[in-house]
Length: 156
Image (cartoon, rainbow, N blue to C red; front, side, top):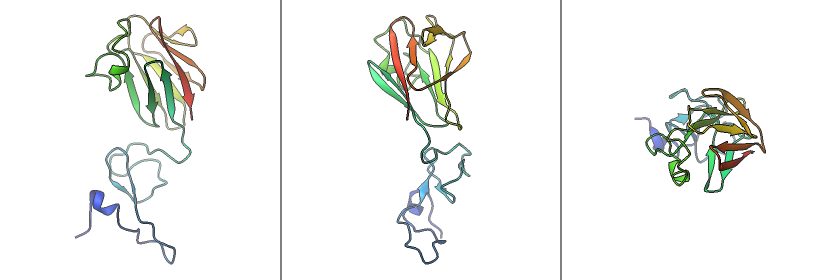
């Protein structure tokens, strides 16, 4: 019976033909399926985009914590733990909406932000985004939520 899931990650690939076999296979970071082609753009099982070596990571450094977003990941920013996995970073700010904005990194490595209908606004370098409008983020940009929660964008 062929191994599956995590067991398969310990088997060397069969196609190494004379080269030293790898001790592990590559897994999809989302569904943990073993990848037959680690250089593929997307997972064969869950069809989500795969992070590539050298692919940028979006970091937003807020005074209360750092947000980190990989290619293909969307992160809702806000105070409601049911809607935002980073809610604890913003709970002390009453003027940040429960579902304030969303940040993500597209497959080309471009970072984006969208205001999700927040009460007090999402600002990029001091300019307020209209509700539902997507705006690109660049390394060094200032992302502000409401009046006083400012983070610095880093693309690494």
